[in-house]
Image 1 (cartoon, rainbow, N blue to C red):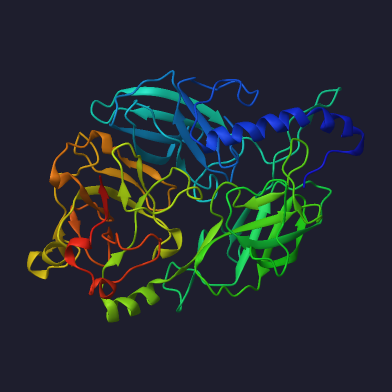
Image 2: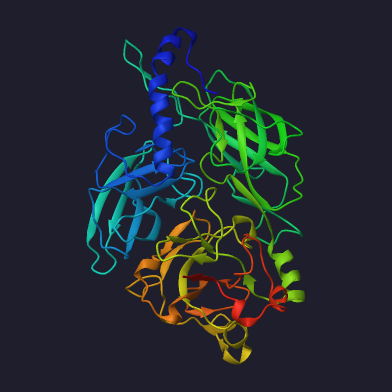
Length: 481
């Protein structure tokens, strides 16, 4: 917890109403509601047509280590049921950081969606850089919204003879390897392949108060929000490991080894208790650090060696639920039956990935027979990368333009189809979902992800062997009634 000096206590008390406003506004952001310029008492940096928030739910505030999410407001009306490109660039270096294709709803609005992750950990973003966020029309390339947002330093700031005080920023905390290099996933179930990382996991960070020399570090089960909550203790369900004392020198957290042996795949968070009081503090004047507030901290997942061994016995297909019923990863479930008034998202359970994340084409297609199409070697063709598979039907159903949606596998739920826009035809009632990793229009077993698992409602991997006793007409992704 970053603290001001004692004689600023009255300043802290005077900001309680602002902290309360922040918590109220956070609920609006999480629900995807429209925001106005005064939501957080901060002036918009570029446009009232689009709102930008971070993983912590703050409007127009970005720091290294957080994510960047966007949604449009009612001041901007886009074409209903259409794809738009959202691009994030670093104006300070000229690099492009992220690109996503987002689907508008039937009113022409974009739901809250995360388009850039872990700023500054796997890219060139630094404090005080300026990021540009643009919405483009993919059909004509026209820029519709253009905003800029500065990257706020993770530090306490004082200025002037009257000690003008900005809001305290949380330290930047991240999971890492022994050298302090950021990472997002560790593998279990076999020795790591090249490019994979096994345990132990380390924790590093920066932006800590110069007066702090020791902090407490915890691994906990993933949760969207930790602010103002007690940190789980040993014996409690969400406690995984810790506390472990970490050493801080001149604001930098030395890479700290956590001798934790995971027993289950899953998403986890790292909490760093700066004042060691057992509570995750996050207010205007005092903030603890985390890798996981409002986002997944890191995942424990099965590695490529485990997947190869499993595929050798049970088949190559990577089958998993992808159709999801909410824009919030913690607020929804994988569902297989929707109404025409529904909004349908795609979301892959992070621990099932054999690679942490990669860009895919997310394609919703009219249902195809499992035995006669997706799993029929007679339909397969050879691909240029030496694999084989079956052509993905070229009439994707989720959008009127017929263009597949491009995005990352590690993104939060992203709107994928508006059932209200579907024609009322029998063949447009059942659907399958393909995540095309190579973008080559071929479903390649063992490479691409396929949702034809309507018999389950969890996010775990399903094998071809699991489908062997299920009637073919019950093997599909989801249905709209």
